[in-house]
Image 1 (cartoon, rainbow, N blue to C red):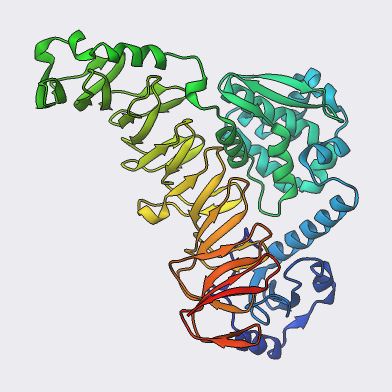
Image 2 (image 1 turned 135 degrees about the horizontal axis):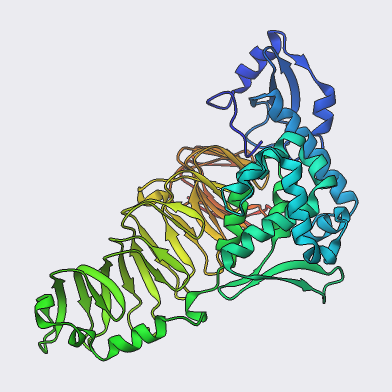
Length: 491
């Protein structure tokens, strides 16, 4: 139940679970059987008030016998999702393209029927069709409709329609065009844009139809655009000419009374200046304080109005800083002048957005809790709540705003999780001592580390505990190989 909030605030202890069962909870072997193939292998009991008690199986280390309470809707949704995953696996529909091809009527002919499919979707969703205006917000209307009719019906009757409409929203967003990849065993449509790597509407629709959380096409579409955005320095724009102009000493293009030098380099050249009004420096609208290099190149400044750097637009009063020594206008970081969206994610004003040298986002602060790459991420200005990304655009680190299940294990709220460039969990720093695979792991640093197969690699014991037949004291460092064998102990 990774994407849904439980009805209980804290996970139920074994004692609380037994008290509920003893008080008249009715066993539901039909639902227990539905979840038998999952890693949790829970037992399910029906409670009064359309609530269900889910009790973790004995094979779940650290959680066996504990439980959570969910609404009837959540349990039903999870049961349907579990059955769907099993069915898709049996029929070889695990990938997005395989899944779409199975249900698609038009297949690679889809792009020739875009207008027809969109018109049919408008007619189907009527009377709310006025909201189908190809905006991100319109995807909320589509998501709500699909939730109403059920994802099972939607994938049978509307798969092509959803791919077409989501694709049109994305096409307008990236200013791109439709193409068909024909060198694949099953040709499929995708989008091409100057500022983006190939964008996949199929991935967006498949991900939402195949998940068990409530459908959110808007968030999924924004994530697809963010991940596929090309580094701006690979895109032909005005940045190169801007930086070329700064090499000549851009202050020379301004009237002498337009600024005041507050600090100079040792050779007397201006270093820090204060503009007396709104000015344009190498074509960039600036105000307030700015810094320049020894060669007269602009290092950093504050925007006097909204401005576009590469493919990203920043609000007025944002303070930007270039990578030192770069000649192509690459940004090192931007302090946002107000709340704004960055690559489809809502960001807090006054916080720093850092960029990798390839100009993909390196770090940012969310204005509110959001799911990114399927991981719930906490928002806020605290440094520990910053989201970090790999140069390929994948999530590298985040703090969980709620309890979440990863690699078959439950992680508590406020756990900081880290992922490799392929999206695999590599570290987890707990806010409190926590049992993993039956071993008590100490909170904080150093964090629990994982092998690429999901087994624990390194941890610190939170209390005295027996491992591989021998007891070790609290604070002992343990290391394991990929097969789970203890290989190193440091008291």
